[in-house]
Structures are given as structure tokens and as C-alpha cells.
Length: 155
Image (cartoon, rainbow, N blue to C red; front, side):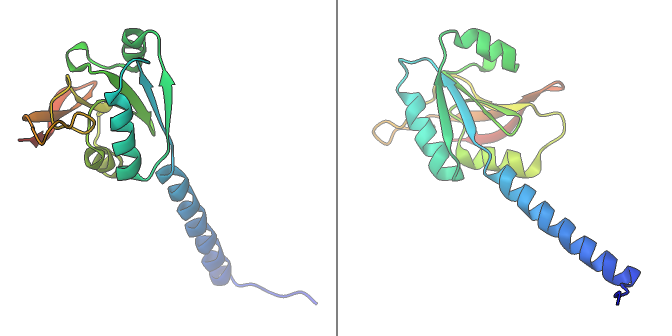
């Protein structure tokens, strides 16, 4: 005896499987690791990595890089935005002491034309650069093929 299935029930089953597959893919993307490149002698990089792991609930793989300038160039980091470490997450480049909240917003919104985010230099009070409750103003800059723009201001 064969059981007949209506087109309606087949569509319902297919859309249920599609939703399950999408949920699995979303979970896999949200759990994508972060790879951070740094000069082996830099200590603030590890402090930033700790901040990012906690703030984003993701694993960070730290790789010591002998030639950071070449790595940054290969990843497309604008020289004027360079900092001490460079991370890659889900196809985006994160340069320097970018707060985890900004990285999360980037991954959620995925703005057109943005290749990554950067905090130029090493501003006191940025993640990984905490010092005696002191802070200095800095900007998180979005960069890409269309140029640069302010993503977030911190005062």
C-alpha cells in the first residue's frame, strides 16, 4: 500500500527542512572562529583577544607573524589605519583595538562595500589598552573599496 502525499504537505515538509538547514548554517557562521595575527612581542594583542573572545563568545586562534606589514598589505588594511594586530572573522578584517560590540554590529548589519573595521594606533582605554581608568577619544573606522567612514565614535 502506498501513501499519497499532497503537494501542500510536501511543501510544508520542505520548508521545515529548509528552516532547519538555515538555522544550522546560522549557528555555524555565528560560531566562526577569529584568527588574529600579531607580532610575538606584543602583549596588548592578547588582552584584546581576551576581550573579543568574551564579548563575542567565539574562539580566537592567535598566530605569531614575523612580517605584520606584509600580512596587513595582503589583507587590504590601509596603511594609515594600521595598529598592532590584525584579525580575520567571517571574511572581514579587524585592525587593532576594535571593541567586540562593533564587530558584532558589523557581522549583523554587513554594510555594503565594507571590508573591515580599524582603530588606528593604540588609544588608551580601547579594548586591550586599558590603563588606570584613563581613556582617550578614538574612532572605529569602516574601510573598503569605496573608502573610509566613521563606524563608531568613542569619547
